[in-house]
Length: 98
Image (cartoon, rainbow, N blue to C red; front, side, top):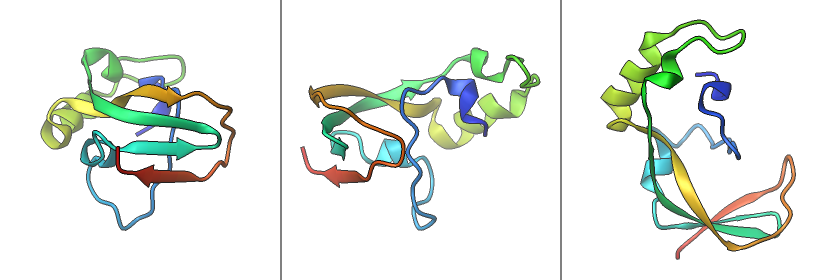
């Protein structure tokens, strides 16, 4: 899916060995990105807006259907900053226990 549909603040590429909606598997964990530390606090519930046409993205009802079927209505995660700091494109992301 094109990430622009979801208006993310941060997009993290995971390795191919992780399956499913990875963000739902790490709720409660801390991500270290650049100098920042954030806790993954809860899944992000999605509405029909994600399927609507936006800019050069066409109406795509399969987007919401896929989220409902595989993500129990959630795609992405809400986070809380626990240590502010600069992050940049290409920064290493490390997963830690809370």
